[in-house]
Length: 307
Length: 316
Image (cartoon, rainbow over all chains, first blue to last red):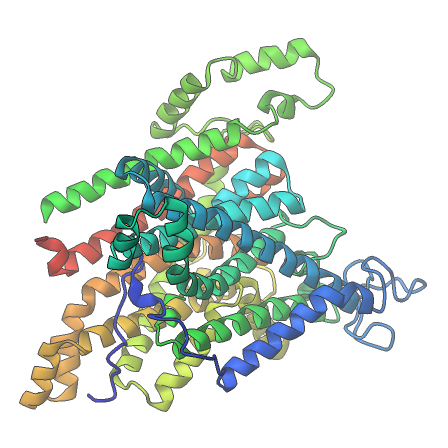
């Protein structure tokens, strides 16, 4: 039985609060040295970030330009001038993919940052406030957590319509609920540590305790969790776009590209218009997962159990 | 134990109430007036006012909410704003497809994934275990429509069987014909559920395997198979039920995406249409149904976790 690793134990995902077994126990010792899967993940993520930033400048055509204006046939196979073929409106798939990268990644990254801002401020705030305030805030948060995220997204989009700011704010607020739980639990754990009590007895203010005692200890688990949250947000935004409720045409993003070109699977010559954006999302999220896994394995945590 | 479960059920009930508040007021506080949407921009002010009275929109929000909640519990979901048809009629035509696909995904996907996960836990660190882990780690982070696209390419384009969209009537078909009809959506959802379930069930069994009494059994010389089936598995049932219920709850997004992807009529395509036409009454009714299913599955997961953990059952 020696093959069973001691740390391979089960963690109930919805136990009281957030389990700390899932999180790295300490900051990575000295410097993070990625394994080969880590490097693979880092290079793929790096590639997509590069495309996201410079895609619009490098793209061969504009996102709504036609590579062959005289040729009215949709879903063409790749050929010179359109290296990934054309889509349902005869546009260049490669160019749209490069324009879409910035939108998919940018919206998701902004939303995750927002989620972290709200979640960490509220979570640590709840942890250090009075039990009554803490309970009220936590119960409200739990009510939102008990809803499927996609349903919350649908309700908001139905009410205010879809635009990029709406998507960022919606995803940010929805995923803030998860970050809140994590940050609150971390804050509570650290609050009862001796060094915090020592600081309090010393007469330090609340703000000083947050910035000098709690934050340095909570930063590492939160940052590793950021990668996981980013994956969920990318999948959430892409799903909404795929349902036609996210980024609106004619703007391209990866999820909406899959939707627009679904016809290619039934009566198209080329499946690339559907396959290319789906592969783009999958490679990005799987690569982020590899990096997160690698970092948490490096720092001795079991973060990989959570996905 | 009973008290704990009752308490849990109570919390579940409160959650459902909170969910109904969020859904109802979520669609209320935001701009857009149901009467105006129903009658269109050209409607006169008097018509809109009359229609508002008929829908009860001139009442205070709290009264509207209570009336809506009462009707919902009596099984009356109101009338669709977009098509003027009672929502229960709309659902009656479509719920079968959604329920059928979800139930079959559970019936096929859960046993297979559990068997694979438990096998991986029986032989940890072997090539089989590592290959399975690698595949499930990759699939778990990929979107549902990626899996669906790969399956369509494999079956429709490479093997030449089936259709990229699910078409045709389901009337009068037998069980196996229905399975063939929905083969691709069900397979896609099975992959979605398997990627999570394999890893989590593996972890659940390995967790039990690392406990002292298993070590005792090993030292005693009990054969490996007997340890797994008689000692480990029985104690892993609670965590496994927890994991299964959780993953079925997570399947809500998958069901919505798959229905749209394969283009057949179901509850999910109905709610997406409702969002596009801003049919608030439809969204409220269907949203409640989806969220309640989710909450109930979460509740089962929670109770399974409680029931299986002696420390939680008998708190100090």
